[in-house]
Length: 124
Image 1 (cartoon, rainbow, N blue to C red):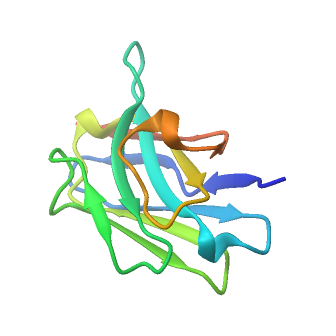
Image 2: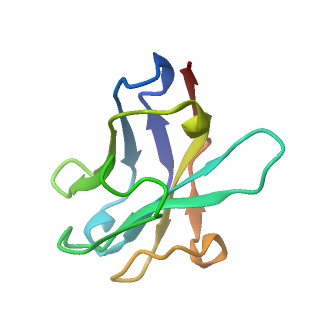
């Protein structure tokens, strides 16, 4: 069984930064494509970023390009989301997700495993 645990969320002022972490259990982390999604209150879950299992390929939603960076450390079974220049519209619960494929995806239903989420609140 694969378990994902997010951390690093919190309250930050607009223009600030946060780094989210997602620790993944299991010995085959390096064989999972990973993704970050977010869900704002009253809205559907939306794609944020994805990374392939080697870390050599990354993909971003247009709304976060140039501000967010996804990365992974396969030795630590952890994927990260560095978020800079945060805006109030980035406020949401952020989820990490894993799929046993080389590449991540921007489609939520293609992921097999999900974390419980971490709240990010950006004040104006």
